[in-house]
Image (tube, rainbow, N blue to C red):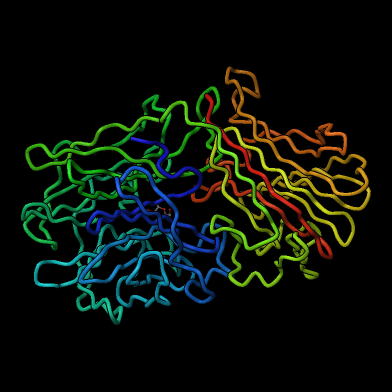
Length: 497
Ligand code: 6LW
């Protein structure tokens, strides 16, 4: 099967089928728009078709900490309505969104009461009773990070109110962080599939079965049904899975990372969506290992900034984007006068970015002269980003790693300037560079098409293994002061190994 199925940071995938259409949703944390929806007619090739969260107020991400916000949706269909359940972590809490068309618009989101946790699954039995099964991780208060295992309530999906007290269900084989529960009824038997081991290198998928949606569940004697831990598989951290039946067999979607370097320690793009086939043997699913697809073509995307940006362009904790406009064929970003001295240190920077989706990637943007300062950034979060910026008559390259800021500079050419950021995978080997995933080059192109590299920085410090597990690199233009006009943006990526 094509892998990655959805490259770039698209973790915690959930999938459902309605007729001949398959729909997939992923986490987006502090980014907006939130919870992308993908469509497929073959459960292998996925096309972005919209987002659940497209309006202020659907999530409360404006002030969530890094990695807070939209965690782990479940997408399901019941009685003519699509449902997406999700935890707005450190925001509104557990939510139920509904839509008649998964392309949108989706509802404002109903807060769940009585189902405190994350990774809410939603399922119905033949009588129409609704069950919300979730991971009982406590996110706030004195017991923050305490884990109550896999829990379940009966739920009124219209009001969001639990109709029963939480019951504890089978919670795996004893690995840490039992989460990502999903319920399935297959030929009269109920299956409870979960992730356990944590979303890093110990991640795995386990399953149990029982006579009812409330159990009791008996664990598969051959758990985990899927893991890549301790293997040399190029995709690691795989887990947090969902299952869907196709005409011929079943498909499992799962998150995974592509760590690189001599010891495969660093994954620049964070957790992506992968997929593989599943067949049922003796009443248990057998999951085929997934393989990376070789020889995919280079992807080039030219974004004309005269008109509105596509849905792949994200802002950070910011749903209104009043500071972004299109004028005279350019995109104009207005800086925040209240911003910190380093614009990309802001929790809500005047930045709009797209995911890095390839191991070798380059982004470039033509910056018009005058009016203000700004540039291009590759961001993991407000404490970890690399920027290339035009500031008056100099081009700055900046590395921000927590309290450390380092700058390089070069004279800026007159007139419009093309800024670029280039992620170049290392060749491996046991040199310092070879131990890393890639080198991130920051520079500009002169009017004579000469490339000037202002700085080259080790990319290991912008990965899900060093910054934080949940998101991935997002690259794009930002404004630091005044107004900054960008004429065009180009992205080029490939996965040559
Ligand atoms: C997600 C949970 C997890 O809700 O992290 O580590 C959370 N695993 O399943 C965000 O991805």
